[in-house]
Image (cartoon, rainbow, N blue to C red; front, side):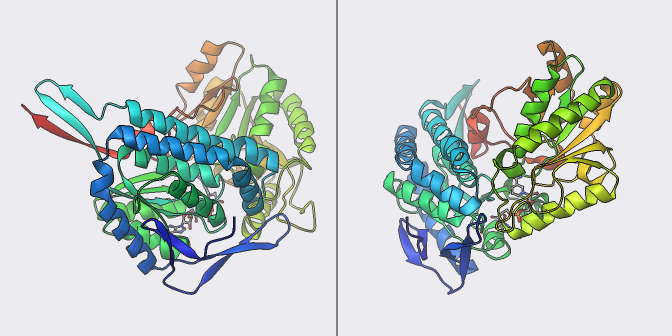
Length: 462
Ligand code: NAD
């Protein structure tokens, strides 16, 4: 695919308002692989107007027809999955195998799930003498990050389409080519003009214009807590709906009865995958004092194996940020047992898979989201302390519990202040609600819960 030099608005690629462009850089070698236009407030306004104009038609389209378009979209994503994987590897730097297995495959599953939900969801229900209609919210402004570039787009656009909403998407600056490819897929799938619109551009310019646009009824944002807080404040002032998927500092709690080697190995793999750029990554491993040294040795050994298998970070700024956190960990007294702040290669934005032992709760690396391949291992004396540490950050996005007995793990998980917990390595479920407790966000994505975010109710009494 050749990069488009315009915006996808009202069913066609149109000239951008301004002349500024954003270079897209491959973080593995620093090469510029394309350029996209940097959208202005006027581009955003044009796109929102197109979405608003398309809303009456799309919201009145029977759910079965919306399901058919989503099914067609899924088929296009399947047909173009190799191209998608190659594009994401080029923009994000993730190894091609991972791009194929996760970055290209997850959006196919999610698009398929919403094709099915659009066809089967009861958009109308009877409650006593009332009929309750579940109606689309309206125009959605979607702002997405770069770490799972297509998944995060599809996790917003597919339920919005299923609900009958129209959309303006502002994707991350680092991965706009994937977003352009997605716009092509939407077009190929026969989604009517104006229903989906794409404006590439900088966060503080195009993103902010979209978040603050009075013609947007719901802002759905995934990214940093700092930006999410501002978007939430602006939406509150405008009495506008908002969904926020923010950061995390998830705990991987290994109870004494667990299979320690399995829990540690899966835990390390979880943190290193996507070079640690996963909001739900289990970046804090909690181990009982009696098993601590063994767990640290296992984790150091496991991390060493990831040396050549992980990709670079998305850009030089993130690389510097993550290396800064590693230096801070050392300065605050944590013990490096794998990796470190030195760049493992001269070329590219690489960071060594890093493991810290002797991490205590008060350390920066135990509290802040690092967004890199860095694991902190903390020690606990008993279950109550483990729970206090697990719940002891401002975040609550995900987590894991390992125990010999499933019921024991479930009992612990029920006491965790977090939106998702994987029990003994439970698999990712694209139908399960995904989202945060506390400062990890507002609202849920995926499955039925993700669909209802884009609906509002109207009751008719008889
Ligand atoms: P970010 O929050 O700045 O960017 C996310 C999206 O928001 C991008 O599309 C960006 O253009 C847009 N944006 C930026 N400023 C905006 C503004 N003022 N108004 C509206 N939109 C705006 O995140 P980042 O700089 O790419 O990454 C920084 C940190 O954020 C990471 O290190 C990580 O901790 C966190 N992060 C979390 C997730 C997640 O999934 N929870 C994803 C990416 C990044």
